[in-house]
Image (cartoon, rainbow, N blue to C red; front, side, top):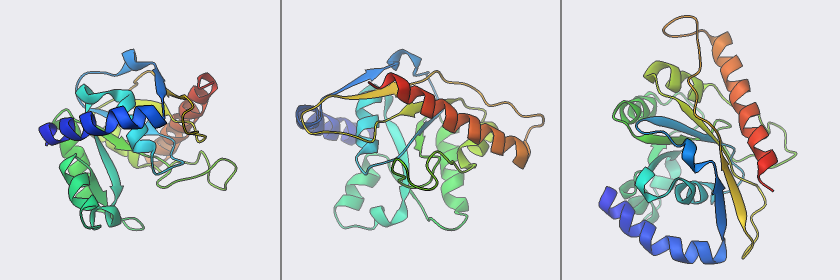
Length: 199
């Protein structure tokens, strides 16, 4: 899988960087080992920007809606570069267990806390779901907040900002729903604050 990812990365990156030049602030914050990468989500291209921001040596394992993996050819490619599916609209225990397995194996799992694309000014912007908080707490891995600008102009530089990793704190091993709500709200605020550097 890593070899295939490296090949796709080497093929796509030069072209993508030509039409969407980008720079990354905070790359030194990327930790070794398992980490939950959490970003705002406004466009289908966000995972590509994030993959290049973290660089090839830090392969990300994105959680994506399962429908994408059922598309002929595209689904095959996505699976072979490490994307795994989640059934939206219901509790997908299998996807959660798979994400936990990857994190415990030291992988960098990408999850969008909002759960779907939310454009600036839309209802629900900045409102995350508790999945990221629960995964980080139960796997004992840090959260890496990242901001990706919504506006991405062709042939204009886009700035991605990576924040400092942190371990969310809870009062007990499993935590409470109130604590997860607070962790999620804090995470979304951290992501929003990073956007102030993306100028």
